[in-house]
Image (cartoon, rainbow, N blue to C red; front, side, top):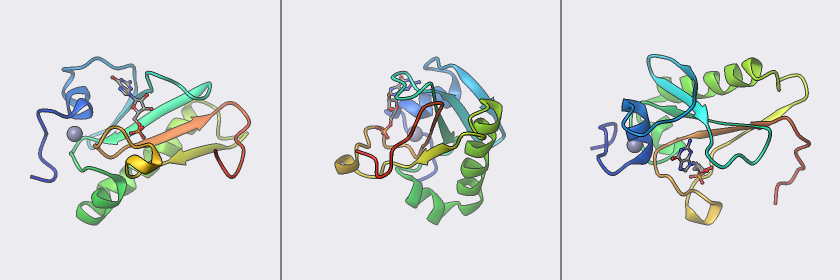
Length: 119
Ligand code: 5GP
Ligand code: ZN
């Protein structure tokens, strides 16, 4: 069921500590941890503790938690000191856009030049 932990979901396992991660921030509703394959000097993932397959379905089902994810993404940027130079918050949605983990997550990227439009 949407919102329930999924036994086959990598990020649900990170939420309960079953899979280790380098956690940089945690709130009642979110966890932020370093991406295992960083694409920038700072590359942190912010996830809701509840399971929804992508950011849009999270926002439709639990808008307050979606807002928590966004707020935490900005807090990560401040904590990592990349807010001064600019940073990017990305929600890959669908395999065609590069989504590989189907538990909603925000990528927070910064610490290098970020071209626009992205590749
Ligand atoms: P997506 O491609 O779905 O937008 O993002 C998934 C991200 O999760 C990728 O950037 C990938 O490097 C990261 N990732 C995959 N497996 C793990 C893991 O076990 N631990 C951590 N910390 N990140 C992971
Ligand atoms: Zn999950």
